[in-house]
Length: 249
Ligand SMILES: CC(C)(COP(=O)(O)OP(=O)(O)OC[C@H]1O[C@@H](n2cnc3c(N)ncnc32)[C@H](O)[C@@H]1OP(=O)(O)O)[C@@H](O)C(=O)NCCC(=O)NCCS
Image 1 (cartoon, protein in one colour):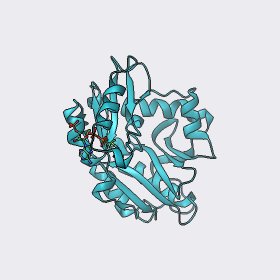
Image 2 (tube, helix red, strand yellow):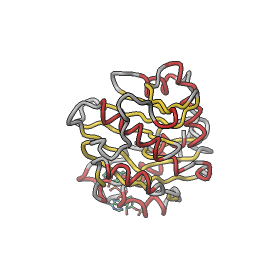
Image 3 (tube, rainbow, N blue to C red):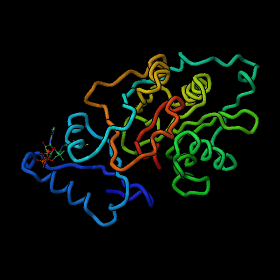
């Protein structure tokens, strides 16, 4: 159980040694975690494996009002809007690295789409978006207005990258961001992400760009207890997230 902030905790890495499963060990661990004083009064969010959705429902968790599908493969970029040589992007849109001077605006954009509260001066947020060792991040800007952003995380020891949060005001903006990423990613790098089913444009964007739906066993179902802010999330602008906490925190 990880205490994220004043209002939210997240439960993850819930695992019991295979030989000891089915004997109540998991239930005891779960109940112990949920009854910790630091959890009381906080919402709890988690990513459920499909087989455990009904179990968490019995424990009082509700399914968030979106479902995720996984997408993975080699990003081709062929299904993205092409930039004509010698011309700017349509409508004066630019795609830029999320450098220091843009941190605050991107964090504000993220807040407007999802209600997530990181700020540009937050260490976690800076490391997550700006650290070139672990992240490739880009935002779409028109004038001084941010219209979308994405962050790709490199996972040490993993053979693939994760497309972390990816929000955009429109499909056109999403295409430009993804096209830019396809151009700059090293060749042959595999990418994974979670795509909200409640944004059909997101699913088709990934399919057109070589990232195909994973099978059911790879899905993760966001669930929550005591959380009531999903109505604030603009799901039509959410193209991908790695983790539920990307949306709620
Ligand atoms: C999930 C896990 C931690 C449960 O541990 P466990 O000791 O086997 O669980 P218990 O015997 O205490 O059972 C706890 C509950 O989970 C349910 N459950 C356990 N394994 C299940 C499975 N594979 N499918 C569906 N339900 C399952 C039980 O029916 C029980 O429900 P109840 O409390 O309403 O009666 C264990 O199966 C595990 O390590 N799985 C692999 C890792 C994993 O999937 N973690 C969860 C990610 S969301």
